[in-house]
Image 1 (cartoon, one colour):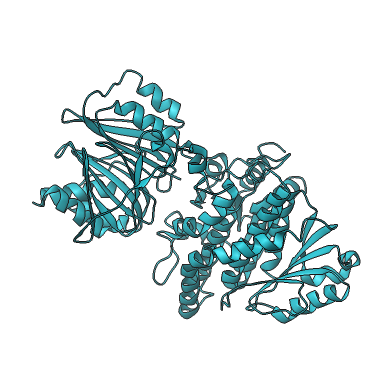
Image 2: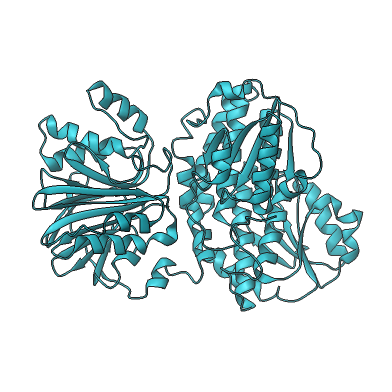
Amino acid sequence: MCGIVGYIGREEKRNILLDGLKELEYRGYDSAGIAVIENGNLKYFKEVGKLKNLERKLNNYKSEGFGVGIGHTRWATHGKPTELNAHPHLGEYSFVVHNGIIENYQELKKELESNGVNFLSQTDTETIVHLFEYYHREGLNLFEAFSKTIERLEGAYAILLITEALPDVIFFAKNGSPLLIGFDKKDIYFASSDTPIIGRASEVYYLEDEEFGYAKYGEVHLFNGNVKKSFTTKPLTTNRESAQKGGFRFFMEKEIYEQSTVINDTLLGRVLDNEVYFEEIDREFLKDIDSIKICACGTSYHSGLTGAYLLERVAKIPCSVEIASEFRYKEPLLTKNTLFITISQSGETADTLEALKMAKRAGLKSLTICNVDNSSIVRESNISILTRAGIEKGVASTKAFATQTMVLWLFSLYMANLRGTISKERLKDEIKAIRETSNVLKVEDRLHDKIHRLSKRYLHGHGFFFIGRDIFYPLALEGALKLKEISYLHAEGYPAGEMKHGPIALADSELFTIALMPKSLLYDKIKSNVEELSSRDATILAISPEEFELADDFIKTKYSTHPMLEFFEMMVITQLLALEISIRLGNDVDMPRNLAKSVTVE
């Protein structure tokens, strides 16, 4: 996820900005840049790749005396990782850095182009600086121009803007993307998280959504709409690692909690009032497609299985799912009217990449769902849809799975609309459910506390069965994978109806069954399956909106009319359960033994 830093003061700005960006490297990025105004003159430096590339470019640069500066690490969402697309973005006399996504940037860009503005990059961010300068040229003063610009923006943003027209000021705004202001005497710092300013600032103010304003040396002016606001600072933590984790015990825990916010990044610009839209896809590209094959590994394979249920149900298109390591050696039959979809968090998964190359040699059209732009799989595919999950430091994937599954849900609706297999009313209902997902993914203290208390009962025994039906079967697979990855306890995911075809032989009081029992989909069927296990004395943990009297333990979920909302709520519960069991066993949750984040070998 992108990172922002800013500074107003008399210290060496080059070092402050670079050091701040280094503290944000853990978030992931593919390019970086800084812009500084000193003695009224604006200078900027941008580079693709790691910060050491930018640092080399800055070897002979010094910024001494009073000035202002902004810096940015970019995780590509619009446009490839190139120097032109890297931040800061330039107008005629101003620079901007921005985290988030401007949903209406295409509309704004067309409006500005019709007024003679030329764009250099492919990004949504560049519209901000051009819009600001346009309003300034129209006669508004600089703060009015900035206020008017913020008023026009739709979507999520954290923004810092500097301009030669007012060289001692940084304009700032925040909505849906984190931004804070740090204070040390008269020096003022900006950052997207605590870590860049720890050791420099002593006090901090965390901006709220829809707050904006401007800062000068020793003063900050804060607004919400037309109202000027007062604010109270807090002492800044001195523990950098703790700050990176945001107060959570492990990065995995932090990433589970982040799912409710990153899912909004996944949706931005893709969910309109009455349709799902992908600017990445030309409708002609899918014109002759009559079947889909999904290929992936591990967690990505489980999201692919979920997507297959949705694609066949909603888009009425045949869809099969393959484990990439098996697909490569089975001499698969491939037909040219099949769309080949690969899914990978890192974009470097060796088996998935080789499977994609096989499909391309066979003449198939390819689409990848990935979190890392310009990765090997993205470069190899005809089309890529970025999940926008941001970096995952925890080896066991959480938010990558959530965002991959969301992209597949969106894509199933996109295909259904394209093929005419969904009514306007049904599509409207689906979009309504999609917009509710962020709320479903929020972790309530009450829920986490209950899972923490329950976890002490599930530390022994001879194994776990996670069971579910339909889309809840791949969720059962994923829940079992999460548990085995970080707790080292044996766990399996099963279709609930298959238990009596062999696995029920294992049922006794030391077999823990995690039963995913959604009310909106096949409830009576799975209830019958769980009753069979209970009668064999299996220990049952039921996850359901409906109280289940035979359950030894019960986690109540919300009643939802859409199965995917129940899916995402239960997903969070299974992730937290794995986390809490692992912590009780004393394991390193973020770095489980024998595992790597990106599997780049067979």
